[in-house]
Image (cartoon, rainbow, N blue to C red; front, side):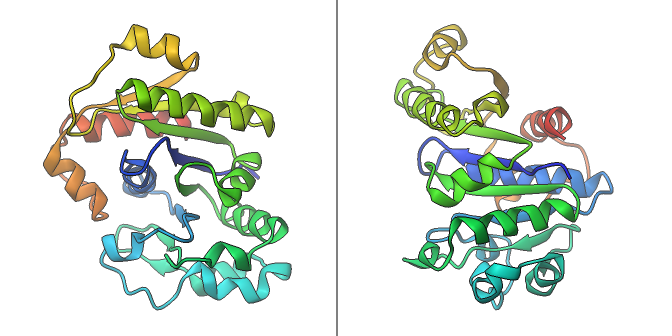
Length: 234
């Protein structure tokens, strides 16, 4: 079994959910049947963003966490028209408290056992994100092109290294709508880490991807950069 790709944001709003969703959409467009697991349990809202009914969430699996398997996941997943199977987080305060590390590990392993899987760990590295990272095939830390973003990303990379996942971690720089503060060379010095990709800002493409739509026609710079990233990590 190959572990999932875990995507974590260096700060809120830097594009971790966009990147996680885009990877799964890209793989689905290529014919795979990927899974997208939202482990941002207390703040996530992928079901709403992708216009899916949030009548089933990961919270429904907490009662069977001790015996969780692929059958439970298939019963709880929301099928998306793209071909992605989405396991949305409940997005409720305290939702993470229902899960111990063993249950989280079984959840991540079951999704990865079904095929390609992406875990959206949200911003920062909470307990769920760290458990997923330990069992991952790779971790992508998304950060803006700012000095503060690079510093936060560096702290996350150090935390991953402390949990034995540092060698599987890389950075994705997301330009976003704000002007970058530092160039690639200075950013490299601040991060001292592999940069897996740099994403240009494209408002329309970003809005489509955030809503769970992968372009079926000619793709712009953001989608092409994400295609390269999906190929590199997949």
